[in-house]
Image (cartoon, rainbow, N blue to C red; front, side, top):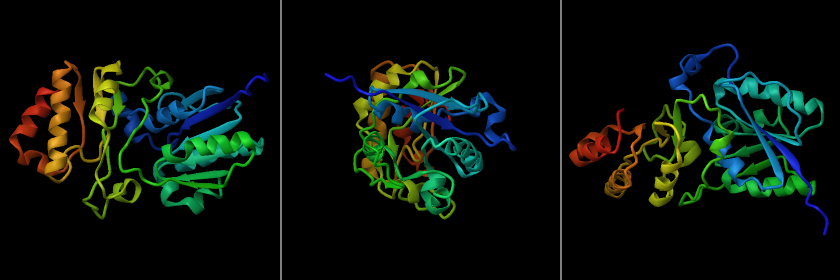
Length: 267
């Protein structure tokens, strides 16, 4: 039996080199959760390296495939890094909010653009690479229920004060100043609570940022789901201090406030 070919995947989380912004303080740096999830979805015949410019400036690391994610504030840096690999003929992939909103621009600087939530297309992208049929663009379709694997937390830099976790995606508010609806959709989508709690229990950090764009949602179903999550944290004895994001209706339900506080919410 022939041995399966091995590859090296480099994941890069670029940082703006001109303005520090949130990087000034360690407690406002947040783990690149999406890259950790993609690492978890990558087959075992791939060696994976993550370079995180939140802590260490990028230096050339040889790889068979390079994948980057970026906000608008750091996309110029992402394009710069991708360019160094393209000079050597190494395929580059970019995803994230900026590339999803500006795919034609991104396509000028990388070989492959992924739009939307990359979990839905990552397996195909990797298979296409191995078969020599890599496409220039992969458009992900939103899944109604999020079954996200536990991220490869072993790849994250140990200097993070806050761990990151996500329990829902999407927001129906469609605010004019916000990109969430365009990227994650208007439908409020849940991860199964047991999956969230299992992952919560494995987080080594004391402080956790729940990345949900609106943890309490906007209707009775979403509010009751938030309560169930908070009760689960309490029942399992998960002693973490967590923060998240929510719309102002979070304060409309006294029980939501009480359960959130009892489960470790501090902001």
